[in-house]
Image (cartoon, rainbow over all chains, first blue to last red; front, top):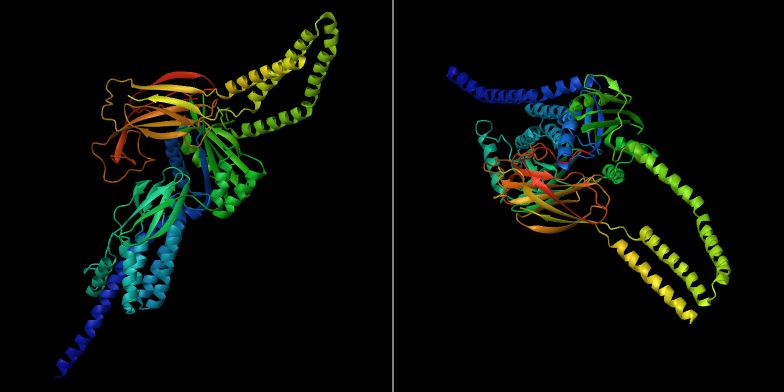
Length: 478
Length: 159
């Protein structure tokens, strides 16, 4: 009898112990996964901090004589190269990460937050776990949607649903699962990983989402590369495959800009979205670019770059251009300090782009020089310039000087004409003395006046006539 | 008599001035381009579209980037300012025989690689292209021919 009682008591104890064991095992699995996610990010962040990574704005690549597609490709390669330098985290003018590495610090922080949330969940402190996980989700949606892997977000959402389930808030858990299901995560809850009740709730959440819809995405300017919920789907304009109703994270990537947007898709809806860079930093950028890049120095450029650094929370600005000289293509990259002042300019043949990236990415680089293939440095050669910055300024100054000179010298010109006309008029009676006919005398005067009118008319036409704005083409295709 | 003569003279010269003005303001340059395949191995029979790109040296975006069907002749008035340097690039596009499952990154794709385009069929690749040297027209009419050959990174031309 006593034995039976002890046996029953042990059985009663064994069930929660077994449950506890299962929980610990699941928790252990999660911790291992979290460590695997955090470790590379933390290592990379540690390596980065050893070299004091600096957020640096990539402004633009003035492509000079290069075709748009080639210039875009080159700019992508260049930004990738710059982003790989240990001292530089490349961001766009508004602070958006241009390389995966620039997101590492945030991702590491987020992974830590999720880990803490899961630890609280395992300690049955579900309320605090939910708070942590909600923060993690918000952090991801605010800063990390450009990541090409959204597994961290999915983990946070799933853990939050589990915490709500533990609190017996089934409806809330179902809502969280609906949000997760909309993103079509790679790993869904199954009977092997979760309680049957939780799996049933997951299936209900999917069926509650209703008809699938789609999103048509256009970008302006040009054709940016589109990513939806962390998955690349191609260059815009593009329409997504069928998507569940719910929140979706859109990312448009240009070589020098990243734009993110979160949209809410209703069941069966075909949503149209246009993504374009906006905000004060992009306004400053487009204002500068509209001046055909003739902006190398001067207080306006300095003020603009200073503002951009402030908005992007960056330590400097890099901007580049392509030029050709003697059949060779050159890349020239300039670096500006946080206060907008000029710091360095490095030029080299395009084949040496990786060396240029390594040199200019170093925040200590100063001066202007050309990098040569043998590793030596020399003065920057005279490149075939179209919109060379210095030339642009020189031209502007020269134009001002000419204008100034003209304004000084132009008033005497009419008086000289008047003088000439007066001479003619005053000479006319003298000539008239030689010519007996009064009519012929008048004819001569008015012919000269008429010629002056024609001359003035033609000159006015040449000066003031609206220049033809377009060239006409006729193209015959085979 | 003198007054009449004066008015007559003034009118005459004003007319001359107006004609000069009109002649000057109507002088829009024109360029005729004839496109042909230079390489007999290039088969242009199934070309789905020709993409015509005209770009001014100093502009960020092309003055023209439009698709036109094969075998057509068309007139374009672009935003190419007379006197500005520009080039014309013609690309012949065909549908891909083995399209990939996902759109490749347009920016990273090689010139003759299959790409997603906003046209039918969705996956196409460039089979031939040709471009002019850097040109600059100020007035008058000119004719030149563009020979299409295999994509070889020849465009844009060197300065």
